[in-house]
Image 1 (cartoon, one colour):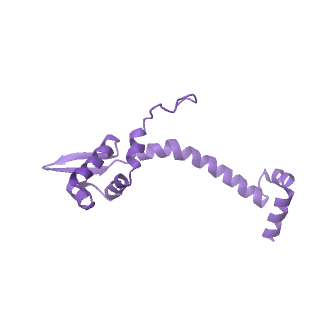
Image 2: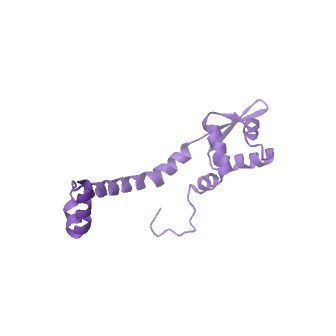
Image 3: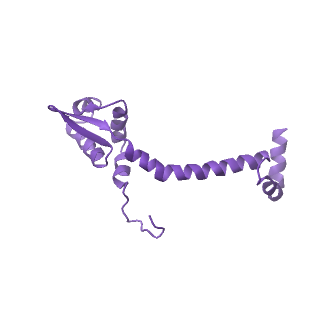
Amino acid sequence: MPAHATINATDEFDAVWKALSDPTRRAVLDLLRAGPLTTSEIVEGFPRLSRFGVMKHLDVLREAGLVQTREAGRQRVNSLNAMPIRQIYERWVGPFQELWTSKLLGLKEAIEGTGPSAPLVHSRQPKLAKKLKMKKE
């Protein structure tokens, strides 16, 4: 997405984010993680919700591509499709994970005085460096 994209621009993952924003829908996905279930089996897992309510949640999950449903005789068998979650991870979590891993590693090296940035930290903040040396000893 370009840097000048507006806040109102739709994202290909908007439906997935919306589906994941509801705790009941996340609980349905947790049930399906163990394996495919019929709609009736999912309804049984939510005794405080009506069948209609559970089916509405399943519809949102289907529209987001998180649940796949197939007909098996008179029953509908629902299964988890984790691919959209993986795509979100790759787009949003992965790049930030690398950023923070390198930042934390740099901080660790600076504190321990073992990395290339250690002299900069020690020269800019001599009091902090002195405190850190005292704690290490």
